Length: 197
Image (cartoon, rainbow, N blue to C red; front, side, top):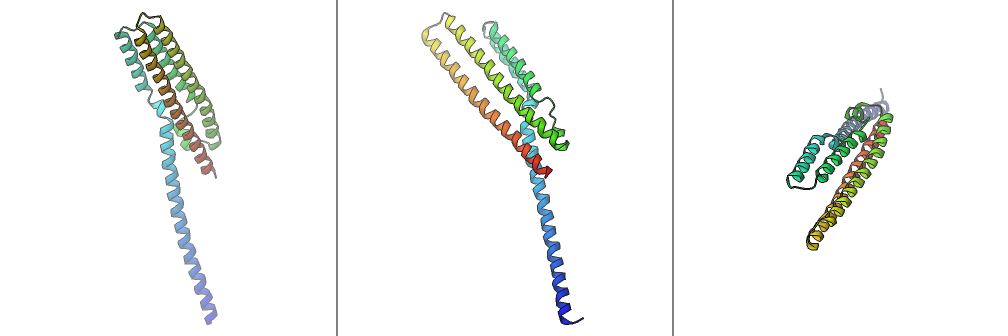
């Protein structure tokens, strides 16, 4: 073997070693990227299913609120309204999550899971709209009832201001909560598309 062939063989060997090192670095980077994507997906899925998993706590809060209203001597329709509102909201959550399971998001068919998530988003928007409408109806009924009570104008204004603040605060919280959940849903859909590619 002459010097020229020896140099070519050494160059080829060096290229093989460089290629092997690059391939190893690329594989490690792929593994790290996949782990980061899985961690982000788990976080988003937990956030998405938080509403469904917090139903027992929500039921307890509605019962406590209704009991407190009853103990405080509110008219019968106030605790009844809270119970009906809570029941409809909880049934609405079950309806919104119909057909969506965490296992399907991780292991299911990407196309059907993506379609299910899009359906979930539509149902969730309807649910949030319904919850806001029911809340407004409750506030309107409470305001009307307050005007028929035999209380001072000053007390009526204080209660009215409190109801308005409660209404605005609830709408703001509901808006940001819904926006965050829908953005999370979009992020999951995007990650599923990346996984497919």
